[in-house]
Image (cartoon, rainbow, N blue to C red):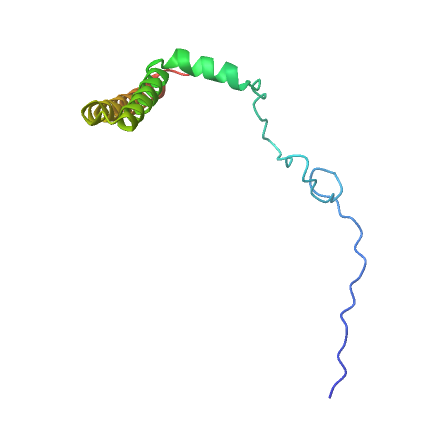
Amino acid sequence: MAASATPVIADQAPTTSASGRGNIPFDFSQPPIIEGFNPLPRVKDETFKEKFLRKTKDNPFVPIGCLATAGALMYGLRAFHQGKTRQSQLLMRGRIFAQGFTVVAIVVGVVAAALKPRE
């Protein structure tokens, strides 16, 4: 058998790139630097409450539909538990109607946002 040779790795000196900086290992805590690219300034982060209020003002029918759906579901389950099957069936149909209303409100909101000119 032939003796296996171990590869020898030569020490490499840092080379300079076209920008004049040395070859620095990538820092995962910072975004990469791309020449000629200037990112837009960061938009202020919103809290959950601020974002909820802004989106509610943009399309108020979505939260109304969600509340109607939840209300019809809760009252329908309560009526079912009490044995009022006719009322329970009517409320479950109302829940379906409220869900459809909410989906239509979402679609209309998306279309309106797509057609609205950007600032």
